[in-house]
Length: 504
Image (cartoon, rainbow, N blue to C red; front, side, top):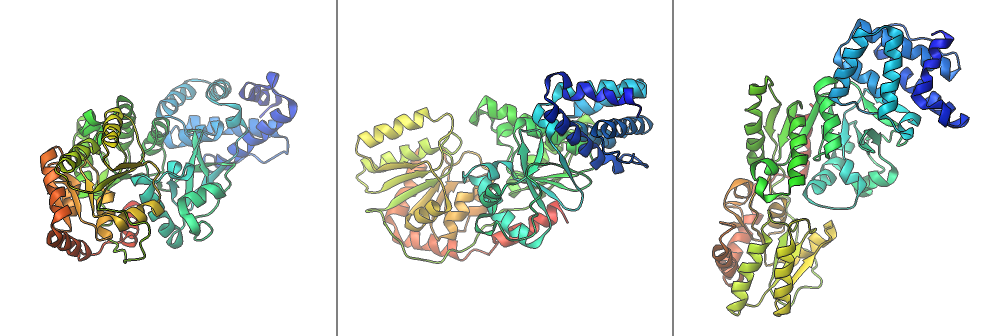
């Protein structure tokens, strides 16, 4: 590219307001990004001169001219990802395609640089990229970023250690919701635990942003709004098939049970689902919900994804072990996020019926407290003030869960809507009888396998089932035997089948 054309990179990194060392590093980063993708966009890649300004200008000129000859969306997506160090949105790809088709090459370069400058931060401009073409990329953003252990995180932390021992893959999380990056050592530890240093997951370079190219992108969590928006463009316009684990459609099917914010976020997620290749539902019920959504997509001219049922484990029998700090009386446990959908209010009201009858037991709620819980907090405080034994453990970990399952007389899980019901199968794996809802996935996994099924919104039915399990030792023993004799399906089974559904 001629010298005056090379100067067009000036608007890109704001030379007038950036110090020389920073300006130089940004130009080097731009040249690195463009050179990383050039072999996939050009037949002849301009050689390096060793001068970042000249090299970046030459590469940009060649790439823009190449795009004008072939405006395939995947090529535009890749060029924009390299130019901005971000996953572009679908709207951005379409806008760029229209503009550079109509402009001269030089004007298209100038417009494209100004467009990039308008959406980038200084961190974007200084970022380098790693083009990943040899293994699936697995998004574990939330699990890698914190130590919480809710249902989805427990799934991720049980699947990934098994995957990395058997398969080549790269775990990633989002860098400022703009693009993937590899995990740091601490983040790998959060996902893999003691096995963080084993397997073939590949470390990558956490300081570099990851751009997948012609490889599966596996989404094992529910992405946040901005992430879902950018993943939608990956699924729709890039050559990377996006495949997801489908947990439930609760914000769409039972919208009254979640917040407005959750409904808005889920709408963005469903926009992504339109363009993904495969949804692996965690139960038959969850798969049916996603299939219902997909069946409406032909009205928009879309085929939608293939939906498969790939049920979570239903047993992994835990052997009896030493029990410490056994509670002074029978303990009733409820595991799960404390909110309206999990329906802990009905459980507390049922417990109060039994306490008023003179029955002696304690109630423990184990799980983080989310929105719409003020009524529950007031009720719990009132019961405590009346001398009732009710406890709330907001922190959840494998150690805490192991302890409470080993000492529980029963687990009550009166959910109103569930994609699977992991606490049900976890309790049954310990041989703990369960009282749960008589429909959907909890009926699917609990009926005849150690659970009593009830209408979760019928407080009297809940109280009656609890009374039976507190007082009838023969019934309790029968349900324990059912739980321990279930047909085995382990986390090894699930991880292997999920890999086949999403990758093989």
